[in-house]
Image (cartoon, rainbow, N blue to C red; front, side, top):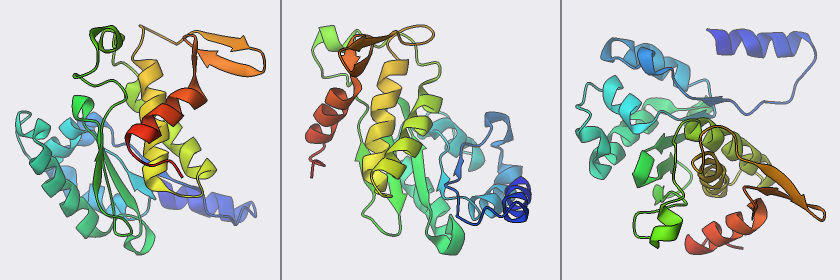
Length: 206
């Protein structure tokens, strides 16, 4: 497996600290016949994060069922029970579009986190969602940074991911970067302020 090969290469080079490995499965590989191999690989990574459609496809569920929260929770629990991560201590994060994301681990109570932009927001805010392309990748990049900055707190890492995804949604292509004094802005907005607002909404501020 590639994961084992990569870990072996790190060891050969004397890199002994453990990396954070986040795996987003390729959509075309998410088929029932690949489920067993997928679960074997998930046992080697720290975070296994299919989206809701990929999750449904792995378990041969319909696309309609893929948007059902209770179905997502049930299938996510099956993944977790199979043993995600070394010693089963990994995390399952199901990215579910307008439903947000579902975060599961044996170390926390499973929890839904909504997207930054929700349907019940004021029209001015909701209308900022332009194009979802790249939002999943932005989520995972934000998650990785959040995991490192928040000392492995997976719920707070998912907040970073949700906020990162919000900037990817606001336009076709890349967000516009600018500066205001020493602060970096994206599409004219402060990332740190948006993160603070989002975490406050989730009652996750320390």
